[in-house]
Length: 563
Image (cartoon, rainbow, N blue to C red; front, side):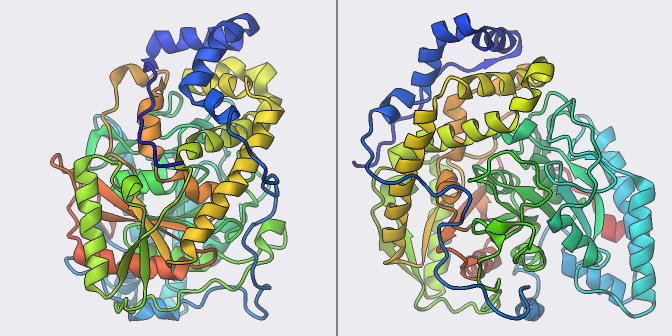
């Protein structure tokens, strides 16, 4: 089966029409009338007709265990990061290294920085339109963390390179003392403990500045949230951030923090990172603990970092990755590594490109990503053509998997809160409930087959390169603000290159590759073999060093302001 670039054709719906559609499809009679049309628009009938002889994806366990867990210290060695300087051309934002240097030199301290961050967050909310990057913030708690960090720096005993560095946490992960709303209007319970990832960052001395906005229950890619407000793209506040880790991307791109933590079930770290002009890493499935992350899509979910630079992402990854006794999926993994991060010599690295897929994007995106390939080749890497069959099946297999798991995760709220979701979420959940158990099992059988295609491609190359999204950030339509929107054509275009990383569990990194004619960022993605995040970060560092970064239209400078 060759590559099929046929676009999705389905009418866009928002506003009152989307609310009406939600009411219709939630009714069994209405679902019967419109169900076939909706499923056909999503490609489900064609997906059902595909023959599959493979066993289903083994639920609940990583697919890529090819070596036993390493003995000794399970955390990554951060030493390779110490040799790095800022990217050539500079970063538009203060990095984690900049914060640490300022503290070490006594130019400022974490408490003054925390006050500047709080002021910047307040200013971002008073803007027109408001940025809506951070949706929950306790100033007393933030300042308490900052004072403790300031005391450590004053005593000459900082915990490490993240001590006193502001970090935002997606509202999908538990962070005391805040509720985890998962972007909804009705979940308000405060968790009993931090998520494992949050606990590790807190232990590293990070200043956790609050909960970051997200697309409701992670079931969309725009970042438009009817309850908490649309997260805005700092490069153009009229445009979307991407989703579902919309707030983390917006917060980093606006300079509120150099690092944020997101979650990725279908590109939800990489897509907003790309659209907002920053770096994002989806690690290998099981590489980072899911304990304390809201249960949304068990077999697709990944927690990972977004950052101003590749070094920021590598630092956060090195601190949060590794086994967690409370998460069985995280246990059987080799020790996380950052080896080679400072090595710009890429001789011997083979980069796979499936040309018809790579070029199925807007011209400006393709041009920037080809230029990124050229940077890697100039550093010594070689490009090899690869073939990845049946990519046309990715969209339907991912859709069936993720919406089935999300609908199951939220079944407990259906009776009492069905009408409390945004209209776009209601339509997506109703579509999920039109699918069958056979559809889900069939999707996992095809998923196994797709994994084989990617494994065979990666037998001949070290990474597979693509754009991160097939377009840059779209304008946020006014009629979507109160309801969200249903736009399958746009969603498919944004997600075109993201889904394989979630279906296969393979790691993937997005790094800025340039800008389109409107000045909107383009992301370049590399996806590698399981557990080989170190190579992706090394490649991303090489690209980053040669791509000039532009200052966004909305930018805050808390480190400078605190000096």
